[in-house]
Length: 271
Length: 271
Image 1 (cartoon, rainbow over the protein chains, first blue to last red):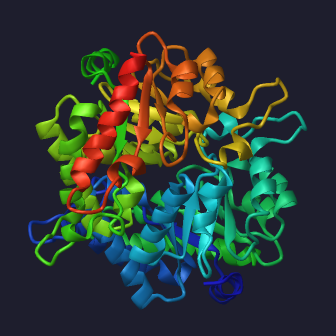
Image 2 (image 1 turned 60 degrees about the vertical axis):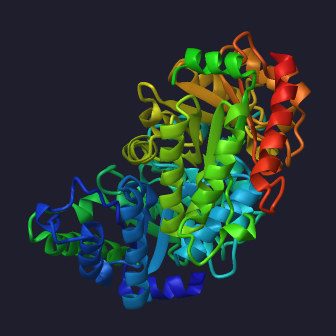
């Protein structure tokens, strides 16, 4: 999916919500875990996807949750991606994997997310530099580079000021935007960073930002819009736990749907 | 395995070699890929492990290679780890996964590598800071943090000098060594970095360093020893392609054994 198609979907559906499928076997409703259900993770995801698809433009599957369930989990990750591709061709699917290694190894990660599974995008860590990121830049696919993350640890290194007065996250943005344009690169910028999103925008005015941290991590949507939105929206705002674990009874999908719709209605006001 | 046990193994076996199982379906000998062989990756690994175990103290499995083969690949990754645990209890097993995410997510990655599979250690990327690293610090297990990597891209951000004259890789070392001591943290420092290993050692004199880049990436062993070795050796020097792909006929395991023995003999001189 290209940038224009993504923006068209945002306008048509009046939402820039990304639903985060951080599916944890210990948190999904008990009734899904039965002796005859081989795929409880997929069963949960399918119900959440069906329930929230009208209110979002993207889905983000965090690979850690699937890996923690071993090969069974990874099989159900693949099932989930295939299910979305077949049933919701307008949804943008992100592998939130934070990968990155030397060139020949990043190439293997790119194969995993873009060939073995048919993700549209993968999150990538910048520490190892250009040759660790470039293998993810494929025609029709996206690398989403970590710039300014939503967690407390973002203060440890990302805010380091260099001899020229530039903070590390700013250097990551400035240097990496030469590696690819806004048609194959996006950036992660945390909703919890408030006004700093304006500093991100100064360097990458046209790129899409994947913004985690609204919801359970308490980022504020109005602030994200104020400092992060551009003329083509330029935002995919993710919410995971607040939507997918809104309820843990047999009504979990309805509750997720209601929660996603609530966010969509708020987003519609800003579009 | 703790630091003392690792050092005892190094002294007893007269080697600090780590064999990197970067097992790529397109590079393993053709005779292993047959209609009746369900597990060619594991068959290759088992032969390489048997052939090189006398000459190494550690094995490093780069997860990218297994992920690129989908759930089949990951099943064979698990098989390989179990095989080492059962047959070579003195080998230290590293998941070269370069993981790292917000705290609750890193915890899921830690479960994957330490509970679902029984790795001793996992490589971790520092960009997201303290709360992304701490979930990997478990009793009896190891986090191996990226400090100064072996690739060209290490110049992009790791060498950035801050306002106090400190380079980013030095800051990563200085700050992160407060999160855990040398009994649960190691660092990645590339063999290709030469004299810079001495700068790493100034900050972390007692930690083990995992040193990739000897062999196909052309790092020099004598230089690594000169600048990186400490009184308890303190080095795990990795070689992947040069050993495991030394030959691609039915004699591949013998060739790998000979190559590993050659490196071991060179290492013995330095111990």
